[in-house]
Structure formats: C-alpha cells, structure tokens
Image (tube, rainbow, N blue to C red):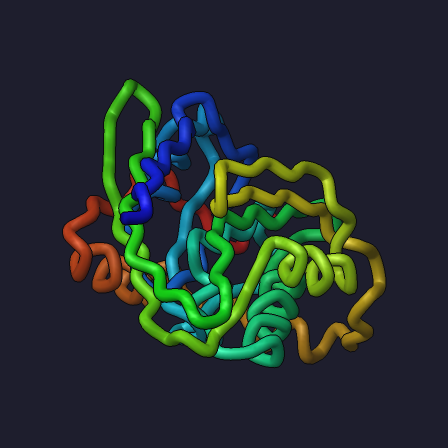
Length: 215
C-alpha cells in the first residue's frame, strides 16, 4: 500500500506588502490570515471567486495577487492563462503574483490534506480533491505560462506542492487608458457590500483596513 505523504507548509513568517487580491474557487481564509500579519495600516485585502465580481475591481490597484491552490482546479491552459492575464491587469506596475498549488499527474486522483502553520502558530488544515483522472498539471506548466507575463522571483517546493512568486513585466498587454478606467470600485458603500457578503458566506470577519481609490 502506498504511504500517504503528510503535507506541511510553514507560513507563519509570511507577510504581504501593500494591497492584496485573493482569487480562488474556495476561500480557505488563509490569505486573509496572512494579510492580518501585514503591519501596514493603509492596505486592503479583497477576495473574488474566479471571475465573479471582477467588474468592481480597479486595474493596476493591487500590490499582490494570490492564487491559493486555484490554477490546478481549472480545466485547461486557456482558462489558466485567462486568470493569469486578469492577475496581470489588476497588479500595479511593480506588483507581484503569489501562487501556491499542487502538481497532478495524468491517471491519478488528488485527495490530499495540507497542514498550514499560520502566524501566531495557528494551525489550519485544508483538503485538496480532484478526481479527474485525465487532467494533468505541474509546476513546470505554471512556470511556462507565468513567464509570458511575469518575471519569476522565487520558487519553493514541498513534495508535489510548490510556491512561486513573480513580478509583473512592463507593457506586455497593450491596453488603452479608457478601458482601464472602466474597472473601478465606484463607491465605497457598493464595494463594502459586495465583499462583506462574500466574507460572511465563509464565516470570515471583514478586515478593518480598507481603502479604495486612494490616489
């Protein structure tokens, strides 16, 4: 019988600098917990599910975009490239993308438990499941797609699990200023309402630090 690997990721010292956008299929609350470790007073963290509510976000606003075990859930390279393009557009010119994910081999299923060590020694466990036996996705696939838009800065690996951080390249996607201005949070009340409902859905407290359109 194949011995099951215990996945442990130590995130207790991880900190974000600046505004954070968490894009995912399921909000585990991990990114928000890491954001609370951020010592900056005037910063914000937002969460969206895939493309939902994307139109209320302002382009080039975020210092960090996070994909936490999300890319591997998507069916094909086209969908993954679309998400990476969205991440690129939401990042400010010096912003970084952070990806935590797991490799999946063709003909295998995923049914993994991952233990995360968060700031203040809090322990959280998440489950990663994927029963699609024909899907295949690896760290090398992620790197190949990322290099089209980003410059790789850091790579770490824990068995099949990996972390990649990369910085936005300049002028890769040409887009005029009028189209960029269309994706803005138009009112503070509207943006709070949208994200409050999302956070409440997952039983997570809204962060106290929230500043939009601060320029």
